Length: 256
Image: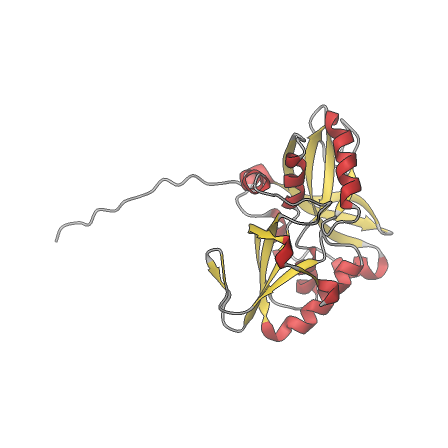
């Protein structure tokens, strides 16, 4: 018997910072018009848990610990990109904070994605990153990894103002400060918000050092709602940064 030829394709690994840059360049969302393409996360839960899950997500959104209140529900059997929602499951599409990186690029702001991690909150004020995974060193979304470690306490932050939440940080050149200020103003009434902290040039942002002539911009993680589901005993499977979706196809979960 002849030995079969095996063809090995050399597909290079794509690290998270490269994925962020790829998706960011495709964002078309206009916060003034509240329309366009945003980056989304896809999470899957048991349909039997849907009502409880929606209640938890609403609580997180009302507490302001989310990047956006927009959501889209997908029933079992629905195909999303290369993934089909399994039988007995419901898909939850939420806005990924990578959308912010797209908004920065669209306005000509030079930025570098730094990493994602856990931020300690005391008396409802974000104090510092206690854990950080740098995007350039991982092929798996850091917040997805950290949720699996069960080190968040979103529910406790909602109740007492103290605990750990998910966030991410990127650095922008100091000359872009006026542009960022304009963007933050536009986001104040938009469906996507979630800015947690803006550091000073050449100064650490929530304890994370930035490059010279840069300042840090910290945003709430787009999967904080999912971390809260895990904390409340709801099984969830997360596929962070799954793709792009028109925000017009989503709805405000607070009106669901």
